[in-house]
Length: 475
Ligand code: HEC
Ligand code: HEC
Ligand code: HEC
Ligand code: HEC
Ligand code: HEC
Image (cartoon, rainbow, N blue to C red; front, top):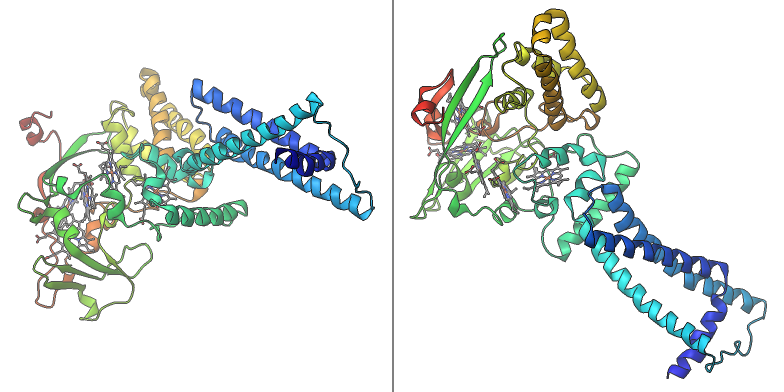
């Protein structure tokens, strides 16, 4: 058998293989193969490199070249055969390979071994390529379109949850769907035809409860959550005040009762929204544990059921920015000041900082340059004494403002303050008040509650040094 293989396959292959195309193919394959194996070894023993472009080269381009080389070899072979056939030059007998000749025997063995190695390299490369395409690094940073989502993601509580865990389901089907979708998006990016900003909500997101409950079990939601928020005023001293709120988050209690904010809506609430961003919700219906239903509708509907997208409420109807919170300029600045990234000791920094954050910048680079320059200029011309006394605070405040800007506002992608509303709460965006606006009424006359204390106890609202915090030992 081996004899037959050598006579009828290897000999013609070597004969026809002696052409520029096949030889080039062989060269490309070997070069790509050796480079990849080298990189894997370095990776195995060295530090992982998180430059996305290296990833593209080593996990996508080199494997493609490797396969291209492999494909060129038979193409060259067949082309030469065809050419010789047309010219009537195919030898009746292929040049004799003397199997007693050790050189030839070894040559054939090398071809066999090379084929096996090639198969191994191809399977390893495709496995590595697939794994790489699933990494947040690839999804988030190899494509500038994802810049806003990736940046917000990196500073979120989910920065260690891979994009694919939320965006792509398990199983071959969703993997395939995602790749088809991804290829379409790649073409859009290549031709600069993608929408800016990328629209939200994501219509083909996996069912949220399937995604989120993989890590957060509903049974663990039970309880109250204490929320403390600081804000700073626009005066010289950046006067700090705090709000202290106890949210009735609830969940499923030990008697399997659905309680509080989580429990009620995760029981079963359906709604109809009449706009693509799911902000206008004129109709919502709760199904109670006993199966009865009550629908609450905007009073201007006069009993009619509106046309629109109909959804059963799930996690992302409130947590729509779970991994990509783009804060408002006010919230982001307050937080940076509470954390000390921008010192509240620096007179007027809240007022001027907010003004600089909200100015128009065409590009991120422009913001990086103009924000710190604007701050320094402000102190130089209006408060030179402050600049003289605290040059270091002015400098760090400038850097802090740049960070606030670049993690929440992305001019190139047209994602600016307020582009992506957050549905949690009601202070900056309609959020809970999309339904709990006091105007959603049931037939029986019951109104969807807007009573502050049903959702939370307000222990302090914008108070300077609230007593409750010192009682709790927090301050
Ligand atoms: C914890 C789950 C989770 C993770 C992890 C996650 N996302 Fe998202 N993503 C969401 C949700 C939820 C939405 C909003 C869906 C909606 O409103 O319908 C979203 C929306 C988006 C959007 C649409 C535009 C927008 O801003 O709403 C893009 C693009 C996106 N994500 C990209 C990514 C990338 C890239 C990564 C990884 C770097 C990632 N996501 C990781 C849950 C996640
Ligand atoms: C792979 C696991 C995983 C998945 C999937 C996941 N989370 Fe999380 N989530 C976490 C981890 C880990 C934390 C961080 C806990 C911490 O930092 O204390 C977290 C924190 C949170 C928090 C509190 C922090 C915050 O940002 O306010 C919320 C809310 C949350 N997740 C909601 C969601 C929602 C909604 C989804 C589905 C879209 C989801 N999670 C999917 C693991 C996950
Ligand atoms: C009706 C709106 C609503 C729905 C629906 C909802 N949540 Fe929440 N969730 C909230 C609010 C409000 C908070 C408190 C917000 C805060 O911490 O600032 C919260 C907080 C959380 C937290 C943080 C708890 C902590 O101890 O800090 C997690 C985790 C969470 N939700 C997960 C989920 C998951 C998973 C789902 C879906 C199964 C879900 N939520 C559905 C409104 C909702
Ligand atoms: C899609 C509409 C919708 C949205 C958005 C919504 N809710 Fe509700 N909520 C309802 C419905 C419907 C009920 C059931 C009212 C009833 O049974 O009387 C309800 C009930 C509640 C209850 C229990 C009220 C009671 O009387 O016991 C609380 C608390 C609550 N919601 C808080 C919130 C919070 C907090 C948010 C925002 C994070 C929110 N809701 C967002 C529709 C909504
Ligand atoms: C349907 C539920 C609901 C009702 C009704 C409601 N709130 Fe809230 N409120 C929330 C939620 C949820 C948050 C937490 C937002 C967050 O996590 O950032 C909140 C936060 C707050 C905060 C502190 C947060 C901040 O950003 O400063 C204040 C103050 C507040 N609410 C005042 C009120 C007042 C006053 C009323 C009555 C007129 C009211 N709320 C009615 C759900 C509600």
